Image (cartoon, rainbow, N blue to C red; front, side, top):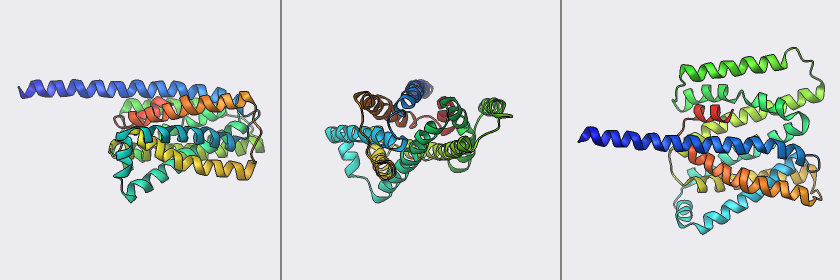
Length: 265
């Protein structure tokens, strides 16, 4: 009887994990499409303002859903000061710094170059997750990471980088560092399941988006946008951000940080 119960529990855990992997793959596909849309949008919209508008609108959508959902409202009410500090830190790290610098990097470099540099994320996540989360990688995971390093080295060697390109690379490295750290912080927050994924996504994104908007408006001004640009912003906000980030945080409840970063790469 006990063995039968254990087998049922194992099957249930596997199905849950498999569903989380599928969600992460769907999000990765959505985020891959974002790069193309962002490059088109950057022809008219300043990078940081673009990021601020995307995440600001997404945060507003998520806050509306939280207010409309009783479970999410209750989860917000019962949280303590430490949880709110964690949400603010996660939002600033994953939205303000990571996304802000990614948009800035995309305005300076080709999308393929930014993508290749960010594919180094699993290396940093591996190091951080072993030390901070006690999540150890398998030999297969280490092998995939080494293959990625070789590919990136082949792409960049022996290129002579100009000053503007070098600045773009440095900005991308900042994005890489913030993205890696946010993967570990996000995993630590989500695996505790202290609140629904919708709540974590909406609250953390609100903190990060608010700072992004201020950063963009102060440094780049308020642009006059065409209908096409608003279409880019609305699509990115609703589908590739509000929906995708919620699914990502849901998947992070069940998948280790290193596995999530490998899926994303």
